[in-house]
Length: 563
RNA sequence: UACCCCGUAGUGUAACGGUAGCACAAGAGAUUUUGGUUCUCUUUGUCCAGGUUCGAAUCCUGGCGGGGUAGCCA
Image (cartoon, rainbow, N blue to C red; front, side):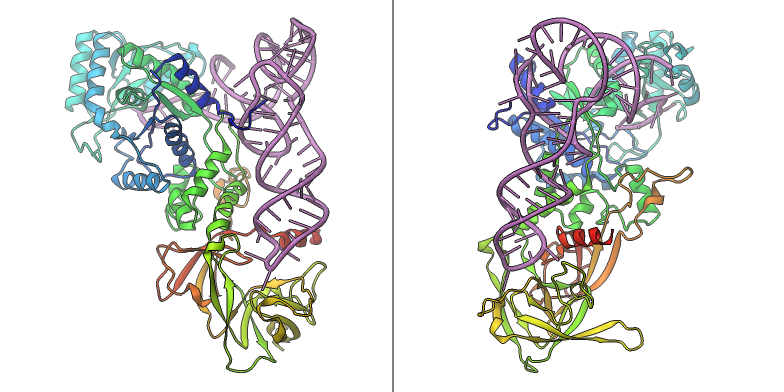
């Protein structure tokens, strides 16, 4: 039976609780977030960031940001900068800022130590040969390298020469001497160093040998005196190697704990695929609002609070599941509902003329800014004879349960008047409806009828003479299927790209949005949450991104009717 | 094929040998000047088979299912 006052801790916090009780780390909690600077951070990283920084906060511990920059051929300062920006934007502050490359000399010295202990050797096998010798899953297929039993002196000499640049790239490696027939392939004499001439974003050309992940990561954790080294499930098989290195070195031993990475429906979550989507112009860049990158979500209008809240809700476990995109959308709706000011805006305008409204007259009507926030105040909304309403809000032949405008029907214009549709004017050539003629009831100003009569529907509108035109980008899922990899033989995930993931419309907005700063978020009533695009919006031409639609009960009803 | 990990409503996550709960989704209703929000109610679950035990989602054994791993990537 769980006690509601002490919400249950997930398995990682349970481990930490036990460690604190046993005094394993002297009550210390020190985590780290260790991205490789080879791409932009995505929502999956956000889960790890929230876990690592959040754990440190919970236990009054520390959390470092450490760049795992051991492969200069893929890494770049651009990514370092974006990662730091994203972590801070999410609301976290690191205690230590480090780079694995800070430890290259120490790592080298430790490697020499292992050689002296007879626990590492220089191997002259080619990459193909190494793979062949390490074998397949069957332990019996593992074979010793012919260089495995070189003398310590020779190994020391060769390793020194590797470092000094005496050998070409890829010609030799330093390998740990563990067990060529281990059931765990990671223990079959794993490579510790490779020769690689590439300019490192921080160490330049100082080194031509670079440590592998396994050799760098645990030792970096150890140097920083990390207590709990939290990583994703695919490193589970590496833990014995992680432990082996720190034990052989006799250095401080952090504890690696693995959890399931985040998977979301209707999107992909790999840097390789992101790179491809960007390169092939399926999206406009890493920060395209359709991308599940932190920068994409930020541009889309997501708030750090919503993302943190989402990460909290999905929880932490070792079960490799997939979270419905709906959860993310729900998190941002939940946040924005409370804080986004409301405005009226029409995305697909249909002209409405109020026949009995005086020509040339304009009224200023009071509109509440946010019914969820009494402190948000109110604003003035201009009303006049010619208006625009949403095309979807009129049906010539209304289906059951359609509460909006139709010939002869009366609805409320939000904050304005009751109007009744008298006539739909059509283009004689196409039959398309071009304009509505309506009458209004002057007694219903503000939206209430003194005679107590009710209307079922309230719709949004803008005054034609006062409306601000804006480009509005309507985003939808990047992929049509929940699992983008669900494809026919011979196709790949790109076959599931959603051709309608972006629709651009010219909307008409109420004048109060004029001059809105980039990043400003609004709810366009009855439509969704929108934010001013940070890159493309200008004072002369506003550009809005749709962050997410509102929950739409009518769409659901209508869908049910069509069946 | 070998090793490691994981299986609890549709999804995700609790219950740590003692009444299977929560959130979101779904369905019904109430409220509503947003078909939004909010509120109420309802439906749906321990992968299977044995064993231990007074008692098993939980411990044990064996199946079954899913995931990961054979880079000089991380």
